[in-house]
Length: 88
Image (cartoon, rainbow, N blue to C red; front, side, top):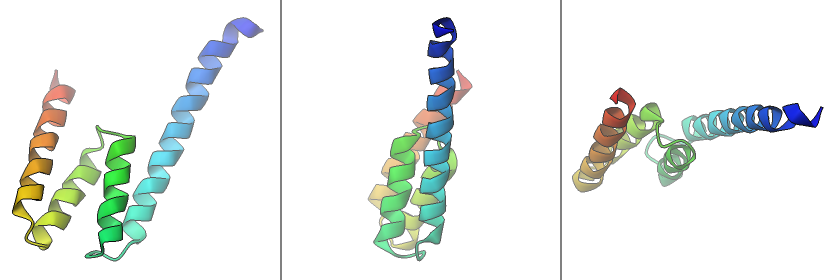
């Protein structure tokens, strides 16, 4: 019985992480498009899952809409690194 516990705990953790990430994405989508709360929610989603390319792309677009080119480029560099890691 205890022999299965480590595997079950890993599965439970993975499920909890997915639920948390989904909640963070929904929270970001619920924020007004130009509001800093949306940016902060997108950052939280990326922090929860660094391989979340959709949230990172949304964050790039958020910065671009506000004319924050340096921040957008910084996020693009991070996105390129993530994509390279996913390809390898």
